[in-house]
Image (cartoon, rainbow, N blue to C red; front, top):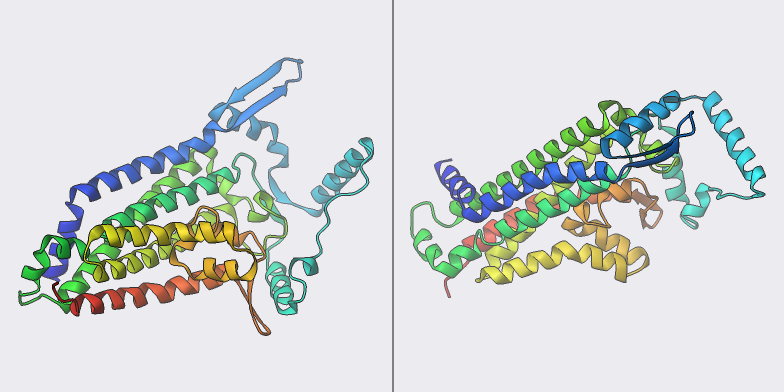
Length: 360
């Protein structure tokens, strides 16, 4: 325990750690504020005067203007909305609109269709909507998670290789607690520090964003902000915290992998380069490799959960399934499962590789 405390103190007091985590905390407030700046209103009031508002004033105006639409989405409201929608189509001479058939999403995979149907049947009705918040808030939470991932990876990349490079490891390995115990303490300290930093920054982000847009907005059903056929039974508040938990697992898995690289590489620049490549690999794969191969790779790579375009947030609102024979697994569950396996796997391998490292 004493060894763990000393290693934790060494990481926390490092100048690079202080700078990066201070920056992460500032970004937590800044990124929570930025979606507000994109809010704007151009309208005409009852007196015929032009109304042009931005920022929080726009958010407050839209809430007031749409107050009558807030609350449960009852069958009566749906009927009224459909009538207005059909009247609009008729007015502009449009006769067709986009139409969903769930069978079109995964043709040739009846197991995926059955799973999707079962999940959607469990969504509680009626849905609820509270105007004010939009998907930009979740996008920026995703961006924050990716930036914190990069910060944690930069710090973790030097945990072992930094001592190799400076020669300090040759001395530490000769002590009574050197080797296996020291390696375990280093891994545990890096994981705890990364997990704490991520949890703190994301909590600050969620509390700030909800305070700016209004706490009632978190009660909106996820289907009302994204697609009406989103499979999960969550409101926006639950989505925020679930995505935070999923992002935490992704960060810890990525840090564990970085620690493994650090235990194998004799120079910090090598371990850092390898870790950063793994962080951006999901985005490159997503854009460059089509089809099932991309889906599998983006599921298994630890950094995918907080990737800019591959995160669990976007998987939650999509119909991607991993198909193995007659078995279909929804991509978000597979991503979480992969992270749960990778965290202890990479951590144990990092300790083992460090204990077997020889000076050279």
